[in-house]
Length: 98
Image (cartoon, rainbow, N blue to C red; front, side, top):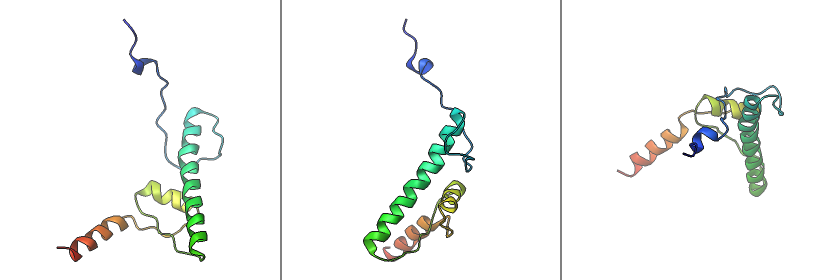
């Protein structure tokens, strides 16, 4: 009988999603943490940079989501955060389109 693929694959540890102390983790958990938070933060920063270039002017960035998203936005230097912005927008659309 062959072993289950699940039993033989590497296990990725659970990690706390808090800003890592370094970009290169010394453990698997630290590396995963840095990859998630710094990698996603880099994605957000680059996307905002490209959008501002296309617009040809500065624009305000408003983050939305949970506490993790807020932490990522703060780490990227974007201070404005509205946790329920998407839900507020959906509610406004629903009111306008009964």
